[in-house]
Image 1 (cartoon, rainbow, N blue to C red):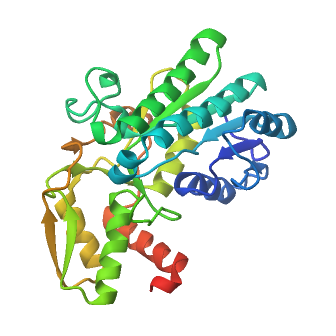
Image 2: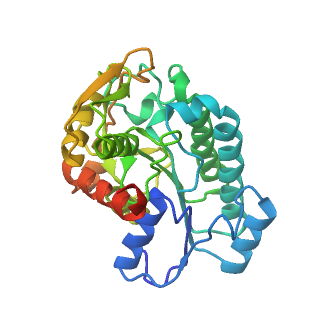
Image 3: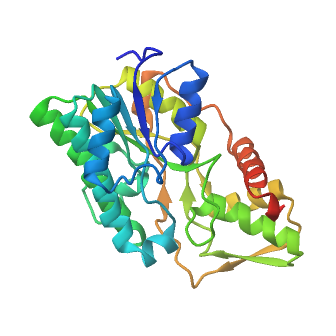
Length: 314
């Protein structure tokens, strides 16, 4: 479907990392009827409240970018929130989209849905072929349930609900809380604070050996708009940068961008997580989409966003 500029588009989670990037991308393209609600305005765990939003606004397109997210530490200490809250949020949003006749829905998943030891790069058809990574299985199970629910509505009711699986994301409006953030924003904050305090060393989790792929959030936003207009299949679709880097290499790059002169000490008593997570983005690349932001450029932009949003930390 083509997204006319007056299409009523609801972005759930429009103030978060991904949702705000999609909102900016739509605004830049001249869209005039964007719908968003803050958590103070709407609790997505309240089915009646979600249903009332759909009834009042009648969105034609819905993007589900709202979720309880976090890194290894957050997943391991809050399993209930990562499983239950995400299930309730996405069920409310998807069910109401069906009830109120939404023309197209895009559900955002995560690369953590794939098995821990799946063949690399991760193809869409390796889903549910082996056990998950234990350190984030709660979030992964919720996301798998969401994409399966979208598939179920396609099969049973013919609804144009699609699911997109991005690689590790970072960018403006990221979460820089050391107890709840993903690896890249956590590194940015840790190196910045170490530089500010003059700490001679900084401790990082694990061995630094795991390989990861990172995608700048504005690139994902561009991919989502591309897929809304050019993709309509039951099968999930990966969106990645096509480049991978070790956590050790990533740490060195963040250290350089932040300007931290000290050294890194690897705490091997802490878990590494999945050994490698590299998405096979062949299908979206074949459709004609490619990312445009290099990792170094994206880290510099993310670091500037951190300085802008946390001036007291500068």
